[in-house]
Length: 223
Image (tube, rainbow, N blue to C red; front, side, top):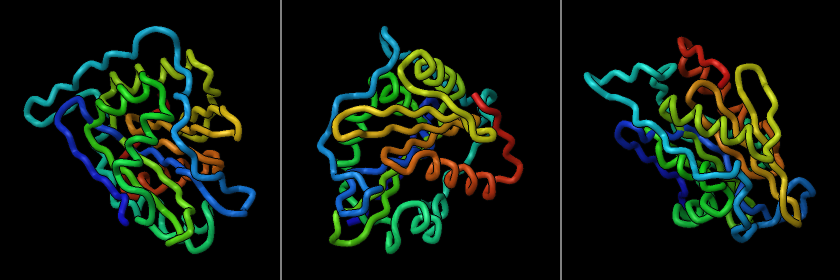
């Protein structure tokens, strides 16, 4: 079953990749069991940020680093990278339905993060897994209006997420639950990549590395 989902929306609706490791089953100590929806990760107190729509007059968006085109999932993380980062024999496109992915996203992300993702102007959801095994890794990549990027980054900085830096990528991580679950987000420019699992920052760094390779003129700044 293919779980690849691509959605392109109008102005004020761009989401960049976010890699989500969805419910891994198996004996490997680095694979977490398939999870039922858990409580949302905490965000700062108060109402979710209200993003400002990005103007689209004459097709120009003045407050974005670059209109990055998000490639196919197999170009975001190659087959070789998937087997190195996840597990051997992982294949792109093997995973749960789009409906399950959406339910999982809603359950794992706080309201401010969900609201920001809904403002994405470009979005791609990808999965990798082993057929008939229950082993799945899920991620999403989204491009956001700059104002929305600033709002969600500020929200994360005021929450329980731990901030770190990897080159021009600003990372946020949060651990919760029993057994432990992990939320990882990465931002560079107005691109947002999300990963949910025990792989740490590796999937996010791979995605941004391939995005830079596909867009050599892209010079994003850390938010």
